[in-house]
Image 1: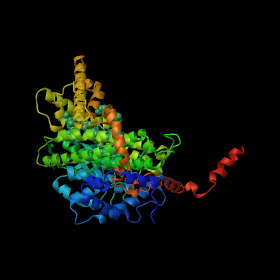
Image 2 (image 1 turned 90 degrees about the horizontal axis):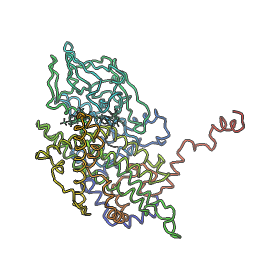
Image 3 (image 1 turned 60 degrees about the vertical axis):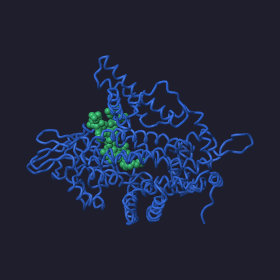
Image 4 (image 1 turned 45 degrees about the vertical axis):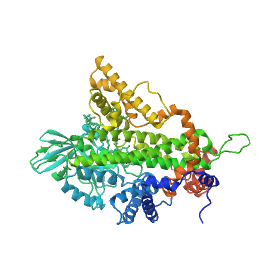
Length: 615
Ligand SMILES: CCCCCCCCCC/C=C\CCCC(=O)SCCNC(=O)CCNC(=O)[C@H](O)C(C)(C)COP(=O)(O)OP(=O)(O)OC[C@H]1O[C@@H](n2cnc3c(N)ncnc32)[C@H](O)[C@@H]1OP(=O)(O)O
Ligand SMILES: Cc1cc2nc3c(=O)[nH]c(=O)nc-3n(C[C@H](O)[C@H](O)[C@H](O)COP(=O)(O)OP(=O)(O)OC[C@H]3O[C@@H](n4cnc5c(N)ncnc54)[C@H](O)[C@@H]3O)c2cc1C
């Protein structure tokens, strides 16, 4: 018999003014896509061995990892078996696009995540046809497990500063991989420590003593039978982190490790047997995997934010606290306008990020298709936009997930709420795949170039066109959508123009262009933030805003129900569909090993002798 649903949640669902299922279908891309997603989730989540008897927060660091590997194997097989052979690739992609299925199994991400998120995309984007055929067969069947090893102990942002060398030996037609210093050790790659046995290594290629830039190499570093590290390979785990503690991030050092010539991924640049180097049409094509993951991250943020606000809004409908009016009883905390202000922006932002992710994915697919035909014209714009949207969505999601947590009071601080873990996952994305400030400065680089082109009368790309509209500075704000967008364009234009003026002022004062850039970089980052709509400006329409909060209030639970996250995916004592918050908090508390006995052994060992002055 299913548990009784909390009365307040029942009332909320009766008050909802729109068809929740219709919104779910819209978010999925149609009723059939919703059905496919639910069918996939039903199949996979009914698999035995996917869930933890003991909550993983009570396991040791080592036990957490071993448990995650156990689940990863079960989960991966279940996903493969659940694939509907009659579905097209696109239908399969749609079914997983919005599903956070993996989050039902891994609260802190999977030890296989880099294999799927970067190792396979790197092969697809960097290998030539022959290499792709061979390695994709092995990687897609999980005969090998890979990761993406670019970051080093000493360098993450500055790729051109990477110290790992790959020196071509024409006599043996091999590359010699070497870590000349401790700071050259690969450091951070997920799965690297104990899970993967192959990786795509980004290393500095040298031929006859000449630098040929950073190139991708596919490198085996563990024996496929024994899993022992190969000769010349030093491996280990980098230690406990804020989150990602089951991703197995590791370090790897090379000591004159030799690999055959065909292990350099040669789609873009090639090394012939005699050591002739054939340059890539654009050296930045080597960075292509990162552009792809930045695009994927935007969609990931939309889903994770939706999960956090679902938990917080449902909890806010159940939690009653304080007194809004004398003798009127304790109101639902969702009736406090401050609570609405904290949470409803999160619902809206998740929808905005979903639509943005769809738009960016289409742009990525078009530019990638053009690249295949040798047309690189739109690569710089894709890079600039992907940098900006990855940085803005991860920053905003981190802020809004943390706000969802704090809006739940003490219970939001419990690991059983799952809000701290969701925060740990999303805040990592502000750093990985390009630290956000660095990426915003990449976008700023494009904005400055675009404004200079606009000022010399050149046509701009669609996403930069606002820099060529001579928007009057006397523009009057009005509350229409068109008025708001015009206002944003005016502010965005002004921010770029001001940063440019600042740089020119520094150059006139005698600074070189690099120092002028650095001195203006705070303004440059701010200018990039306005390339996509940010929340700060909405506050200037405060009266409209508070009116909107009131309109959303009766539909808030319906809006988060429409995200259609099942309880296993929310994995939260506060966010379950039935709203039985207090019973769940107690059920989870009793799972703590400390509750197995009324008196812990530390009393007899330490407390009692201490309190009796015997210690
Ligand atoms: C919580 C759920 C989320 C779901 C997400 C799913 C995935 C989650 C699982 C995976 C988890 C973790 C994975 C993390 C993996 C990693 O972190 S991999 C390592 C990532 N590292 C980086 O991103 C490094 C960032 N640094 C750089 O990209 C470059 O160093 C930088 C661009 C900052 C500078 O490079 P330079 O070579 O120095 O270039 P510049 O001089 O600045 O510019 C030269 C020109 O090149 C253009 N450019 C630069 N990058 C690109 C690119 N990628 N594509 C195209 N063009 C590029 C740049 O615009 C300049 O052009 P111009 O000269 O102006 O014309
Ligand atoms: C959870 C997690 C998972 C990861 N997984 C992987 C992985 O699988 N594979 C992999 O290769 N890497 C991985 N990374 C590494 C990640 O890509 C790097 O941490 C990231 O690129 C930032 O580099 P860094 O850590 O060296 O920081 P730094 O580049 O040293 O940045 C430190 C500070 O310096 C500032 N700074 C640096 N350069 C500039 C500049 N030009 N202008 C202005 N400010 C600047 C930054 O803004 C930042 O504030 C992972 C990281 C994390 C946190």
